[in-house]
Image 1 (cartoon, rainbow, N blue to C red):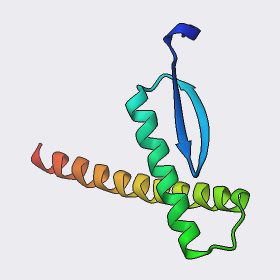
Image 2: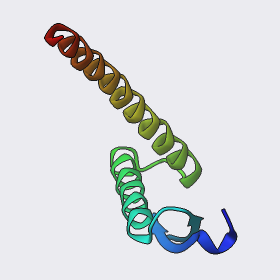
Image 3: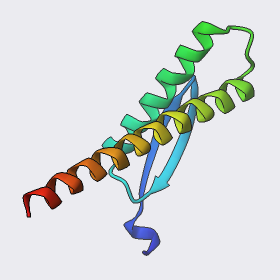
Amino acid sequence: MSHSDKTRTTVDIYGKSYTIIGQEPAHHVRMVASLVDQKMREIYDANQKLDTNKLAVLTAVNTMNDYLKLKEEYIELLDLYEKKEDVKK
């Protein structure tokens, strides 16, 4: 992929501006940034003594936990679907 194929999008996360460069469309990058910002604010509301670094790490840990749970659920659903398809055959 050439540099010209990449999208440059500036977003605001937790009061700071970041330029994200990548293949995803700008609207997708903005949506992801908005979700990160929302999660950081949610965690901060629960514990206002966190500094930004700890808040960012907790946000990453929470997000990865959610991702892994969804991935496990997806695998379980895919397995159930495949078993149903095998029964139909």
